[in-house]
Length: 267
Image (cartoon, rainbow, N blue to C red; front, side, top):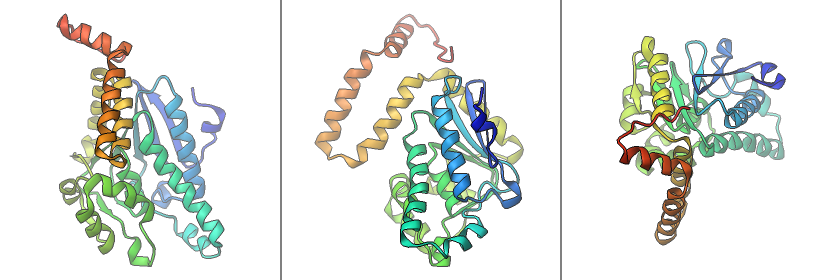
């Protein structure tokens, strides 16, 4: 059950059912826009979900018609009075959230029912999988207001490559969900009325068909390999391969494969 701290959250809801942990942006009256408090609550919810033994896969979703409109307007006005030290602390706060989600030991699936812009698009970018309604729009619009899409650039370069990252970040253009899928920003387009059901079905499939331990190690491996020289990455993956063979999950999986037994991992 959620702790009292989670129950006291104002902008975020957390619940777990059927081995899926749902983190919901719950500020629809402000288009789920981000401010420092909301980032803090997201960090708290993801930390709880990571430690929640009843949760194998995490879904990030939102209330209302907009997934996340980026930074809150009142918060942007407040930033005008910040010193460099204040701004660095605030930027680090957001950086920690993005890094937390990217390196989380559980798969994170974004359920994007509406527009994801600026920081909201960044939030969608760092999830492992993204489902979106066709009506949703995407864009990193920071250059339009003299700002930088700085933190997300680290993850976007890894996800879609330099050419398309430049196209999106330097133009600040807002693109359709279809274009976002072509660019590799999102994985699946689903009619909005079917979105929640399809995300749930996908998350349940991961829970049932895949070893949670294998998904965790695979996610960690994919995060680390890009920063390594070729020879180091090959040694690292060979070591992981050898270590994985000695795990209980691998032994169970191979035994099931050899006996032609269909394994259900969600137990």
